[in-house]
Length: 417
Image (cartoon, rainbow, N blue to C red; front, side, top):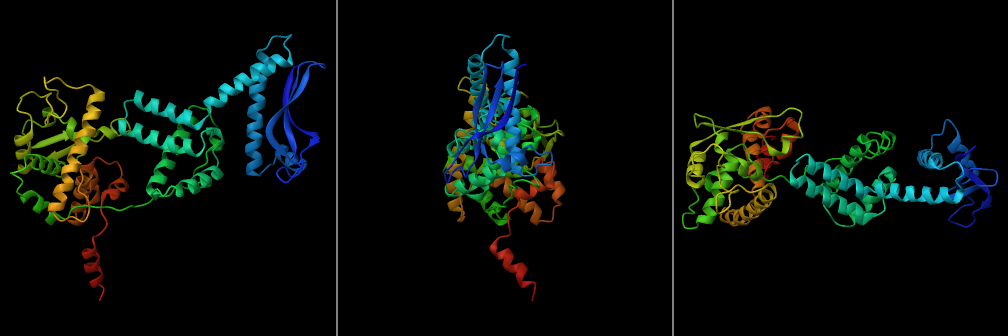
């Protein structure tokens, strides 16, 4: 009867400092009495370790992981053996088995599953920026270990990776970002039933990623007023970028992607309100939030000054996505155009920031932080701020609220005595 199983081979004892007197665990394949073979594996254990590994109440995490790998090996070998003809030989088994194993090994590479998840993101029309950040994370793990298998990621691997990436002098938030992306890919592989949930390395009993608040920046309200009153009439390009920043800020901290996608139909019949759904959350949240913005006179003037002159509900408010002949760009062109516009805005906002004597660079992202921070400091309830920003949790909103500035910290401290 054909059979396969893994066992320790006590015939050949490994000696030396590296082996510590261990024996190789081998895959035993039996076809007939005359046609059988022990096939070496990558595992070497002592007799005591083998006995503990095969015990029903095994508790050693390392041995449990090896046992799972051996069981997987046995299952794969059994599948190959059962598919062979009755008169198949060990040589035929080995050829088929190693071809199958090699293909499976390639499909178990961590980089392969990053690629598979990125393809999933593209097929489900997730923002391109999400795909880009996944690709950056994949490159980091691939540089650390190009042959890392997704079913062999342990807490030990994660600690080793963190030590390695610390040597790259990257920020803590970047490291945590890479780890969160890895966690997402592992969850994806578990969902596809490629790896067992038992091998999940994160969580309360596993590796904890942690969080960091980072440096939060926002304009003070006085600086916003100064920005509004800044005379840029002699420089139309800076004037345009200033107005776009104010539009973002006054429209609930609108980001560039969502701003570029706004159409005239997003403005209600009264002309007083603008409504939209964030691109980022359309396919990620179970509950879709429609954000409603009051169009202040300043905002209406910006639309009148820089917006489209056409009267068609399907026209973009700001014609960023139109070609010279007026046709709408395809999705790839829209993405590239958005990136170009963001770079252009940030380049000019940096110049405007210097005019305002800001100690940091002014960027489009600052509009969102400023919106949240100024409302929070004015006493606005965080739930109202959260709704305005399209967040499903106030914890997300808190990320955008800047830390107290130095003078405010001094003022608060002086209240103590």
